[in-house]
Length: 216
Length: 222
Image (cartoon, rainbow over all chains, first blue to last red):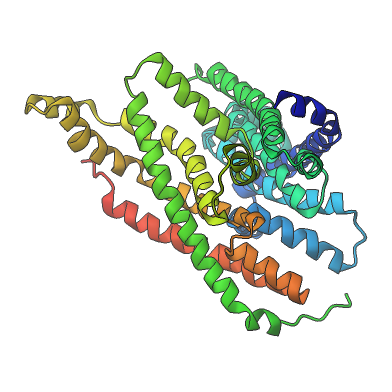
């Protein structure tokens, strides 16, 4: 079993790199878009908050796989020339953005409204209130669940294999296609995913403990 | 955009989607039922058990939570039979995977539920002379079920969405129905324009129904 793993391992690096790359892009895009949407949900006027709420509920109500298939096959029909990697990643990014925006909304709304009013009363602009008053306080509520969405992103990126992106998942399948020894490769793949995600989970747990002492 | 929508082919094969939806719900229901048994069993077992048992349960939970479900689905369907020298059909395999997956999430839910039982209830049970086993059966578990009901509801809806992965094993659930119509008629936009609302509406109807159930069984505090 070990020898099959060792022989297959070199063929997985490229895939692992694609998984990490896809996850990293999605995490960054979802972080930025999610915070903007979260602020929109919390402070936006109705014409801003409602479309975001609608989009977020729509996306979170769908299985990720269905979202990936829909976006992956529908985007090219709009006539937009887009690579299959970008198209697949777009789907994952939309999904994670919806989740991050809920995390951001929850973190922002956990801050007492008095903080925002105090910022207004000393004449801070909206951007200043966000950057100097709300975000620093919301950070500790935001980080632990946000890292969970990062773990979900890495796990979710395995579904990109189903639209033909050669990530870690599909590399494993390809090696099995040649060796016909499924068990060692799946175990190896599971270990690789586990190491990535467990590290992230531990960071999240550490942060949670780190912030736990703060009392309102 | 040089594409003309044609929904006729989707309606023609709509029974694949409707029966697919039914199978998706069935998979999720059986999955959560077995998952509850696993989760509850392990939560009770590790509650006040020795260090070794708790470490083993924690290892199971951490492993399942940090590995993609798709990999687990493949591992159980292709991997295990290849070394075990036996085979099972795709539906059985998928339901088992789903149950083990759900179990790992539910252990945590049930454990939190057990911890949330008011101390006074347990003392009251002791005071009327219940044995430890009776205490678990008649006091801890019934109280805990009402505490964890919202989490169970969310887990069920989440599992319902995860059943879409069964398509990779050719289990004829909703997503498989969609992909079947797509590969046979090439009407992918129309198919997913129909399937996405089916998932959405079912999910939100379930959510609404479960919220009603929770309200009915919620522990009223005065």
